[in-house]
Image (cartoon, rainbow, N blue to C red; front, side, top):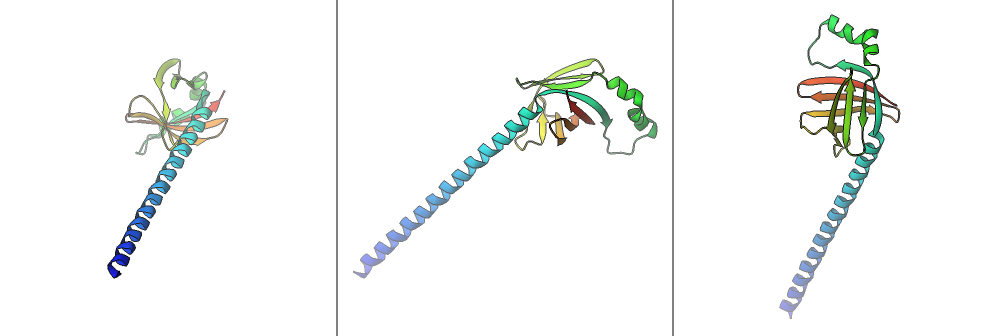
Length: 156
């Protein structure tokens, strides 16, 4: 009789453990699904807000070393801002973009990183980090190989 009670207790403990284990797995699965849905919707919102034509209002090189004052002055010069006139980046719905800078045009594909902090190009070393973004303005830090450039954009 005592052995039967022990066996029943043992079976009860195993069933309870398995139920708790299944609850944990279900909870983990539900949390994973919620995370995936939320991250996808954040990415989609960012993608929608990026699509369109953005005028390039300022370009500034970013270096890790102290640069020559003459070089920095060139980028601050009003003449350079006039040269930027007509320069733009246009992000299309079909996940391509066109960069027109100083009457030179460049096309590539784009996507938004899972965390929504970067606009990725077709090549691994070509991407933009989103520094700040509103409906009307966006600041990007462009990485193209070893070149680093800060780009101020205004929605057209």
